[in-house]
View (cartoon, rainbow, N blue to C red):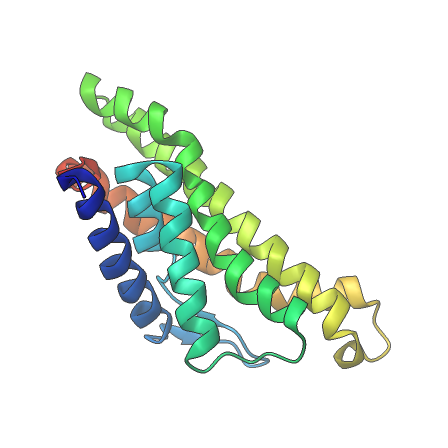
Length: 185
């Protein structure tokens, strides 16, 4: 195995595990459930270091760890949506990878910050969408008199939106002050 591929796989494993750990370090627990965490940050870092493959693989490892170690699964499709899909799609933050690297090489921190924010919001909203869909279909009974879609959106947005904002802020500060983090090997 060549050095670059080995380095990618090692970083995927390490940062996937770090993402899992950060998901269990709750900054704020919402009263109805869901927690504000920095769990997306390592996935976003890998998306910016290695592009789409690095981000998606790291998200997949994170989702696997979440599902196997303490996941709440009532149906295989719900488990796939809430864990495998939800964490994997955070890797789509890599869509701004080229923009970020060009901005970094040009020394434009404002443009770097914009690329980081857009990528983080994209990955975070895709994760929210997966949780929303799983909640709407599989947890409709918890909605009571409310429409299932409204209940699921409200439940998931209350912790996901703050998590997205927090991850975007930390990512901007971290990656613009230490741009070597987003540089491969």
